[in-house]
Amino acid sequence: MCTAWSTGVTGICMCYVDDKVSKVAWLNRSNIIYAGQDKWSLDPRVDLVTKGQLEYSLRIQKVDVYDEGSYTCSIQTKQQPKTSQVYLIVQVPADIYKVSEDITVNEGSNLTLSCLASGRPDPAINWRLLNPSAEPLYGEEYLDIIGIMRNQAGRYECKASNNVATPDVKYVNVVVSYPPTIKKTQSSETPVGRMGTLQCDATAVPTPEFEWYRDEKRLSNAQGINIQILGTTTILMIANVTEEDYGNYTCVASNRLGVQNASLFLYRPGTGRDINGSASVSKSLWLLLACFACLFFKC
Image (cartoon, one colour):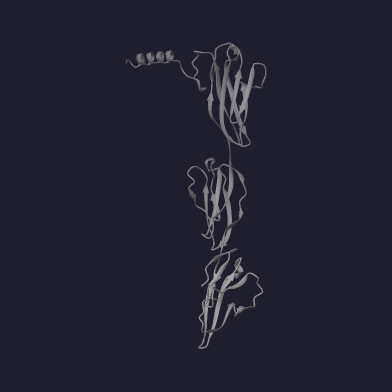
């Protein structure tokens, strides 16, 4: 018998004889490898294993795919010739020889990732997005993603396996670009003479650029004004607030894919603006309106 070997290892094709044998030989595809103890093959990797007089096995070192095929142990006795034929199957570990490069795409576009592998037997290819769930994705050599969304960005794993050796694994990093969305704003209720702080948080890829406006005028770092940008957050600080500083401010977030803006307010205490930047009505005004409604409907 010949076991199924992987490339690079040493294997043995077994053959046993008895004391009645007069001649013995090993052949491969009708080519004589050994005749008795005489080596006919020029391959230095091939030799005999003879433990005692009854074993006549063929050893092949550093097995290669070209060694695969039929091997024959031919035995000549006084009565009749006899052969033992085996087939050597050479297995090759899975090897990923081509995979997509890291890529950046716009949200909503279509994307195909490729992962090509070789091996014997043919390897199975599986994909995963390495997010917290890391669930398998439907795809083999080619993974098609239709209308990619921002939550599909991340590191994609391609694994090729054929149970010969440890699976081969490669990775593709996918960045999904999308326009800014302002997720949170923080207005400020500030007395005269104190520091007012307005904050604007946005999400975007690439990271957004920020601008601040008062009416139509763009603001910049100047006396009494300090603008900070910390990644996807920007803060406008107004030192020593005066009556002229109260009012509406605009935060603008932009990248190459789009622009979004939001209104924030710097207001004096008790003027009825809520702290999230939207107008609100004071409790007393609500009570007044409720009274008018009650009189109108005779409640």
